[in-house]
Image (cartoon, rainbow, N blue to C red):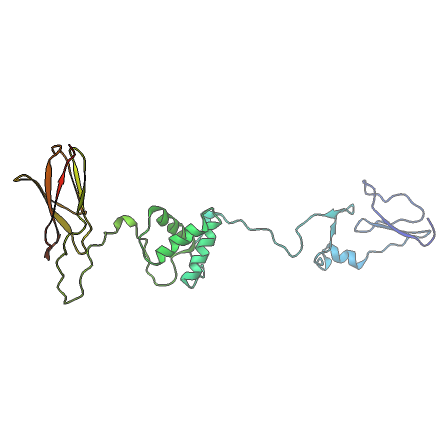
Length: 266
């Protein structure tokens, strides 16, 4: 080796410095410096710094006792955190508006396999205080379990659709007497040999319809129906039958009768 040349090499596997010309020295970081003819032993301040004496500069590699780089987490990055769904808490979410709550709930459930639009539709119906189907109620329940109740307009409750009563006729304004139902329109029929199915247009304000079916001089049906139709069976083939029908409103009054003669097929 030419005089004045400096080399850095690793020690042998047994920890002894390799044989060479001149005096040899083993440094604390296990690296050996050779200077031809005379040994120069130095423990660099930088080596001391990287070994923990003064902290590790961000991004600098670390070495084992043989000079191999030590694998480790990338400086400046943190290990990913894993959240156990069983440990989710509803306390301290820090959400201040229902819009923030909606976004947080949608993001949370989407990350657990829910379809984002389905979650959003269910949550928005809930915030409008509309009745929810069993599936929608389940989605909102999961949202509440993860995010707590929406922070605004409390208290909240989940309204199942099964508890909703279908609306009846629209009540009139205060001080206005409800009007009687109007006349039947669109009365028509379809026949077979033994049946006639009469139908008509729905009458606004009607709560039910009075139906009578006449054969000759006899009344064979005298009933009340809620829907605007009256299917009559067990009739004689090829015979005429007359229907009388009118609209009625409970507690208010009735409309006029409409009539139609229909015949079964022969």
